[in-house]
Length: 101
Image (tube, rainbow, N blue to C red; front, top):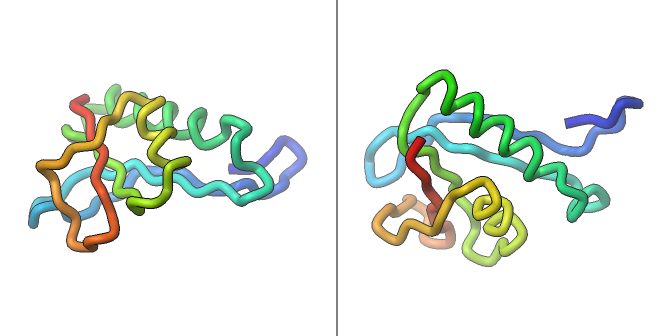
């Protein structure tokens, strides 16, 4: 993600991860501290969700988020994901948010 004048703000995209020993499509996003709470992560995440949905890439779509990262958890909620306590990531400090596409 960059501004119109080229300032780097962060990244957002889709990547394959493993959850419960199964490949799943993850929606990931990172925004630099000075650009947080301005809607950039949500806007980019919605665009990626729509791309995954319109191209029938996979279902479910997940986000693997550190259990203490409430800001990223809010973004996941804004794009329609919910905490899925039935899915487990290999890292015990991460939780999995998921949604069907």
